[in-house]
Image 1 (tube, rainbow, N blue to C red):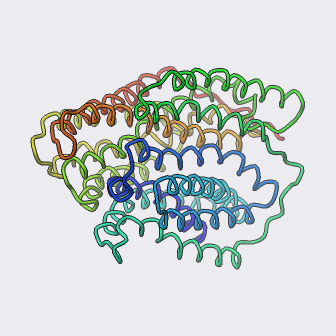
Image 2 (image 1 turned 90 degrees about the vertical axis):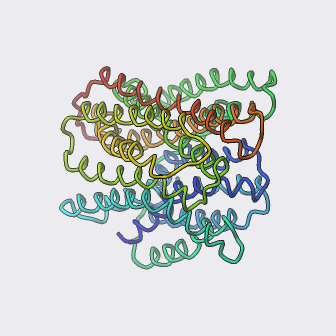
Image 3 (image 1 turned 60 degrees about the vertical axis):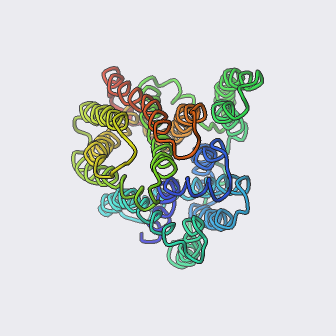
Length: 465
C-alpha cells in the first residue's frame, strides 16, 4: 500500500508543484507565455488521453507490469524535465510525464481492489484520499522551498529531479512486494478512438493557446472549426466499434446515458477553472509583484488546507445529499472568486498574502465539499458492467476540462497582459489582467451551481457482465 501511495503522491504533487515554478521556468528558459501554458497543458492532455487506454492495457498485460512501466516512464520523464536545455524539450518531457502518470494512476486503484479483502478496502481508498489532500497542501510549499534554496544553482530544476530517487525506490519496492497479476489478452484497445480523441482535443486546445502568439491567422480558426467534424468522427467510430463488437474508448452505452453525460460535462466545467487559475495567479504574484516562489506557495496554502479538511468531512457523508453538497461547494467557490476579484481590483503597488487567506480558505472548502458527490452523481446511473469505463471516463473528462481551462484563462490573462502599456512589473497591467481572467472561474462555478438543479441521480442497473 505504501508503494502505491508513494507513486500516487509523486504524480499528484507534480501537478501542484509546477504551478509555483512557472515564473522561474519562464525567465530561466526565456519562454513565451504560450510556451508556459504548454508546460501545464501538455501534461494534462497526455494524462487525460492516456487514462482510459492504459487502464485497459493494465487489464490486458497485467496491472503490476503497467504500473511499474508507468513509474519508470514518469521517473525518466522527470529526469528529462529537470535536465531540459530548452522549453521545447521541457514540453516534450512533460508529455512523457503525463503518459507515465496515466499508466500509473488507473493501476493503483485496481491493484488495491485486488490485493485487499473487502473489509480492508475502505481504509485503503481512504488513504488514497488522504494522500491526495497531502499532495495538494505540500506541493506549493515543497516547490517554493526547493526553488528558493536554489540547490547547486539549479533554480527550478530540483522540483523535477526530486522524483528520480522516489521513482527508483517505488520500482524496486514494487518488484519485491506487489504480487504479479496476469492480464487478459482478449481485452482489446481502441486505437482509432484514442487517435480521434487526441486529435479532437488538440484541435480545440492548440488554437486557444497559440492563436494569441501567432496573431490569430485564418488557419488557426480553421483548426478550431475542424474540431467539430473530428469530434463527430470519434462518436461515429465508437458506434462502429459497438456494432462490430470491438473495444471502445468511451462505450456507446455511456455516451447514450444522459445522466452520466450530464454529470461528466458538469464535472468538466467545474474542474476547468482550477489549474488555469493557479497558473495565472502564480505569474501574477511572482512576475507581477516580485514574490518569491515560497511566498507564492504560502499564499495558496489556505486553499489546499480547505480542500483537505472538506474532503475528510465529505468522505464521511458518503452518498447523502449529493446535489445539495455540489451546489453548496460550487456556490462557495463562486463567492470566493468574486471576493478575490474584488480584492485584486483594489490592489495598489504591493500584495500581502494574508489578504487572500479568507477567500482562498472558502474556495478550498468549496472544492473539497463538491468533488466527491460530483463524481458519485455522475456514476450513479451507470450499470455495473460499465463501472470501470465510466470511472476512467469521468477522470479523463475532468482532465480535458482542466486543459481547456488552462487555454481559456491563459488567453484572458496573457492576452490582456500583452496589450498593457509597460512590460515587466507594471502593477496596473497585472492587476487588470488577473481581474479579467477571474471572470472565467466566476462563470464556471456559477454555471455549475445552476446545472446541479438539472442533474437527477438515478439508480444504476446492477447486472452481471
